[in-house]
Image 1: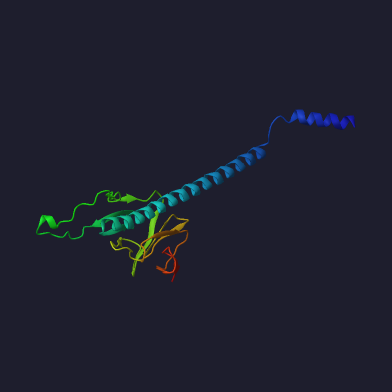
Image 2: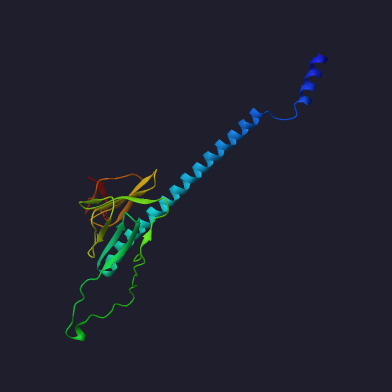
Length: 208
């Protein structure tokens, strides 16, 4: 028994370091863990950029709806699929001409004038791009389209797909109310709203 213990102690004293195989194994495991962590972070950055870009385009659509109603003019949301940019345009309506200055209505007091903050082109975040846009019967994957928001309310039935290489979301714009909604999937069918006059809130929808 004493001889076994002495031999074991001698082998421990003799082995002062790790073998090459053990070192290579540790290096390999560290490299795998680092790669997996970097991949997870990259995916997280892509998802964050997509969410930011999608919400920004949706805010532009909602602002177009508000702007059209406030100015009582046609407002267009332009989307350039080649440049991955978007912006708003207000189409001036014809201003009536009054023969007598007294007939001209007075400017209403207390109404806040809304400025078009999306009149300059805005670009989607890096690694996010437009994949498809459909405005009524017009469907495009490149070039430019415009979604019209009407002064009397409502808009052209539209859908816009945007995303990264791994994920796509769809912005849907409903024709009756002009409201917009985001879906975390690649929808390919235009929306149709069903209005229930017995309900106080409008906008109940279903898809064709």
